Length: 496
Image (cartoon, rainbow, N blue to C red; front, side, top):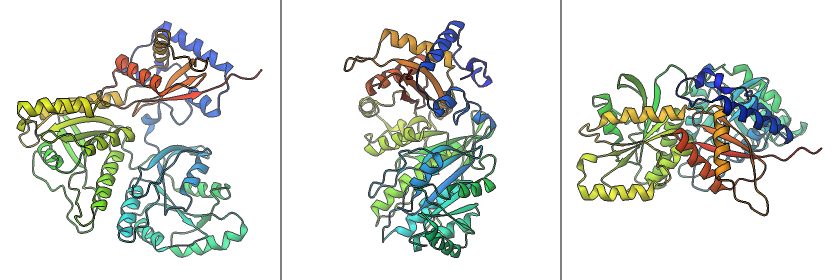
């Protein structure tokens, strides 16, 4: 990687790398030449891969969503496009998993590839579920790859998604999958009847026809995403999330300074309300609201489905999440799940304890004990004790959000990072296991938003030692309000 101390993005608020730090980096980088590195490793170290530091300065990458029924080969197609096997989506009965995004490249063009989970075929709720899941994936994409199993043909579920695709007006590339040889070409041609234009016969398993389909995607792919949450210069996006009845609507109204309709009352509509532009602390923010989740009392499972889906949608559109917790009530498992959802989504995090003005001394004491016990994994999250009803301490919310976003954007110079890890490893080396002691060879920050670190090592680094390194990174560099990711790439010495 080029000397990151020279990058403009690191001039403000970043730790300063000294000449000694730079010398350590050069020595460690030279030592990497003795180890087997993959092309992806080389690209990362050269800052030319998908994690190049100047990516966000140019604009958000265009988004391609892969949608379709279960078992039509979406995951196989994603792996084919990525040219590597990835853990895509684990299907658990009754649970709609988060969408997973990857950095992909074809024909010299980079884009974000979004894999969506398969839709459960539930006789009582299939049409609602298909519509909701498809609508979210389509709404956040610039181009849609609609995958249909050519050996089965178009089903009623496929037809339901086609209606949404036509309504969205988004460019669609129709993928007729599982066409493994010329005998399946006729099955693919039959999909012209869907009215989405040319079906591209593809075998995701074998790679047949995937290049032609990707060429068709590039023809309609914009240079930058029209829906990116990270566009430079625009209002920063804040999601208000939390379990029902914690005061999200009240908080939004208090921040906006007026009563406004948050719930969309159109029958059958499950879309999020329009984002709200609100000025706070002299800055304009875009609040992505999840208030007004309409529960269907006759469909408990469906209510959980919609609540989870709305939360995930808000997170995908936001940069920082304010998780509201009802301070009057004991911290619930659902509160913990919402916080974990923010961490899994890689968003900055602020925890706001609402209804603080109603607490007596006894409840405050027990709440502190609950926080110590239940939220032990997020001691780094800024906290604000507020009252949406009275407006008490609302002025504390903006500094907490700003702190979290600053940490979310932080980049540590490679020289400073390696010098720091060298000091840590010298004082606290990895335990010897099986007569071997893994050695940290080199480290770099692959990206920000959230900060992601890649460590090259000569052997397996235990989970406990990774947590130790993460804890020390936080102690040294702050990262208040943001999750950080530490991944390890084990590399062997070159054979002479």
